[in-house]
Image (tube, rainbow, N blue to C red; front, side):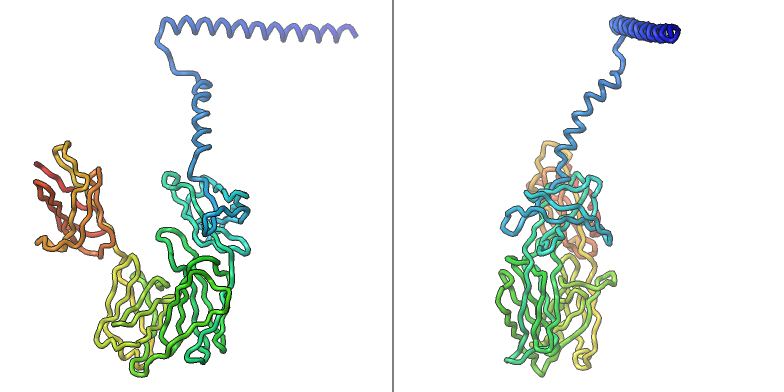
Length: 404
């Protein structure tokens, strides 16, 4: 019994002696390092010091990262809490969970693509938000509205218009932001229709069309609770109507942002690019114009044969409008160029300019919405006149240099 006790006591004494020797070695090393620091230039900081200095900065950057926060509001600006959020990236859909009771939400920092939406029963997300790189994303506002149902009837001169097409869109769409895509329905045989999932207390546009009738648009400040009566006018027997589909410059179907205009007659396309143009006025030999925001308008020859034969026609939009960017600088760095007027011309004759803009403090300027082609750029201000061209659209113009 005494032997194990002595062995344990010996082991403990050995461990204590090892610890004391280690402490003495560390103190000796520290004194040596102190003396060496006094006689030699300082070396790199210890790893644990570098970590302790960097950690607070990293934590602060994460805590105040603005790209991860947003808020859900209704049309009046009041916060709406506890609604389910999703992120859509192409055909992929990711659930992010509900926002807080104060309407606030965050999304993962690595989720930098796609669009943010509210997807909750009884609510319609009127405006979503795009998810870009952290440097460009700020606090996001998702705008929602209570869902309601639009009910009504389409008629003409007291008789129902069977199978009329009714489309509901945002009346005041906001450029650059993901928008509610609208809703559509086809009236029944008695002309009645019902469209659910319409945002309440939101300005809306109702578009109605039917074969043999002139298309019509109605602007609403909000979806009415009462029955909506919509009246269509029959087409005149002299001119008929033109049906068809509009394709983009790339060959894809256009959408409801596209218009077909022939003389004084015009109609908006449906979501699948189809259209029906009522010819209430004789367009004569005027060309058929197809236009949409962000693309060059296109012109087609009159299509009277298609009107008489009821044959569908295929129209095509022009190419996307382009951007031209350039810079102007002076060899005299003291010269102030902010506000310098830059002109865009169609030829080197520099007759009437197509457009004008002003350079910013860095001498940068740009022209947007240009049809594809070549242009000339000219700057004439005070005591100088410089120009360059031809410059192809969709690129960067050669630098304008003021030498005097």
